[in-house]
Length: 193
Image 1: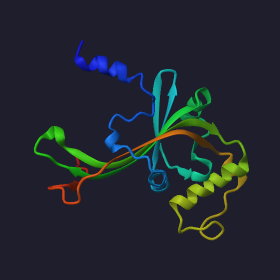
Image 2: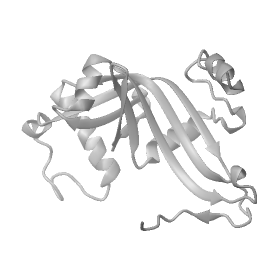
Image 3: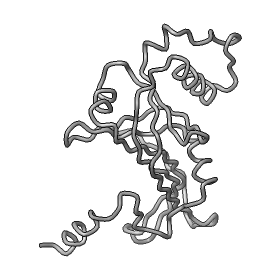
Image 4: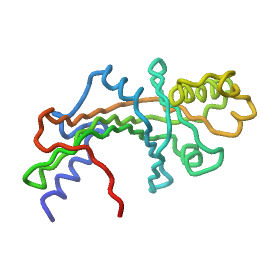
């Protein structure tokens, strides 16, 4: 048996919110809240039996309710999975500069990340779902105003989507920061194949 197999099996017994690299762990609630507020998108992980599913999604964070909100189609894999198993994982990540090193194994990248463990539920209240959809509009298009730039959201439109609340149970956060003067640090730019 390779030496890592024994350690992996032992580590699998640790709590789900344990971070192996404590030097990268962030516990400051204001740092976590700020990342959750400014994150451009999140990824929600659901499961169907033993098959995990990932769904990148626009979201909004409500610190006063300690909850994440997002929406999806009324019929589809996300809703089906959540109705069968409400346990979800949600992540928000920001990428910074690539940090080169003479040894390829020591290449790194700057990042900020938050992982949330919680339970998702469909919001069945039209007024609450409308409130959440309006929060999404305000997050992603704060310069546009209902009644001026677009019509207020009517109840019949709310019924055409499913709005979810993830009640946050546990949160972990990590940061990899590079020195401002890191030699040869650069911003990643995708290349065409």
